[in-house]
Length: 548
Image (cartoon, rainbow, N blue to C red; front, side, top):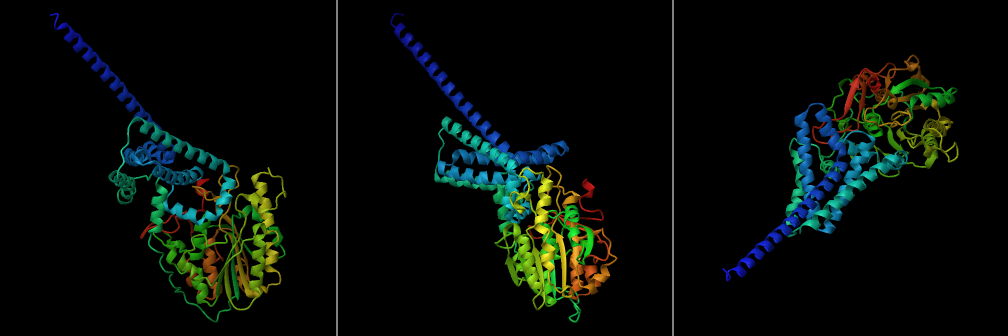
């Protein structure tokens, strides 16, 4: 017994050391698991911030509507995308992570920035619209500075949580890295975007959708060629030598009626009253106007890219085509695609600050005094928000209400415009139409135009015509309401010498009577895929009235 006592004591000590070692190991393991749990929670918080609108629109709203299956699909697909993003965040080396987070931040910024202001998720159609409206980014930054700061704060918070999640996780466990892991993680990172495009799953995560939608736009089939005009044309018709469409920016009918219409009292013209724009955003409204819309048969399957545009009709009638762009000095905006651009003989950017519209008035005046035949589509600078950028600094107090800023901008833009436009012009040789691409909602705190559910004020625009006496006579009894901007197209074809009855049957009534049917387009005015749908609404009620 005495001999075995030391061995027993040694054996007990060994058991105690082993137990203590196991306990230390167990504590270390628990700490690792705790850190990993914290890492996952940090990441989940960042991902929820980045995708809060996806979670709201595609999960919470669907649950509220008792659409549990769709909500489950959305939540599961977001969880898959979150998982692969987290895996890449943890596996990637530092330089790769920097690139990953920069790309994710840009996509999240675009997603949240868009949905913060217009409460709908980013789509291919809205991305195309945003690219078409990119020239207005400065105006948007000035108008929505507070919202953009909040957007930036959300993106910064999400990135901070992502970085924190990576640091905590990598402090808990060693992360392996090899060429095989690199290839597998990259494939895993791309896979959800491929799944999204080939399976009935939704939504695409905010950290990746910008690139997926951009890829959709880049790989979309090229626009179809423009169809040739088929209406009969009379080459001997007594047509005006110069026809001009003046398309203003963001000019609402009621302020125009109050401030500018009185200045036209001594100028012969036809005033068609309140007209309905064909969109409450610039790009869809202008695409529809240039393309011509068969309002009686307008439907989501229509593709305005292939219609015989106003340029094609003008060229066939012997007019030289000219476009003056007062809003951008670069490539044409408002979804003017290459097949349409090829029909314009002379494209002239004409940007000149707050006096741009007067410069354009002088250029049009000179054009109408020249020889030959011309059709001109002139896009004015107008009075797009933020309105204080459209009149001289100090003209009114800087803290003036938005409505006063708008009135001041409109006066500066248009008070002398029509006098300069028409000075010395042979009115019997020209036909001029004036309207605006869309109206404005001047309600304090409201998005002025291009809101998610456009209200009537966003569609209400002025519609005037300055015509030769022989043409003006037929519009003497025209109503002062019920018109749509869609009627400009068939009316102009009649002035050019096309069969007026056939033009009215093909597109819309002439301006002698109200529109056959109100038609207006959303941001997706052209299909993004072969056989895709467009956002179009039609009816006999003025656009936006049903929502007020």
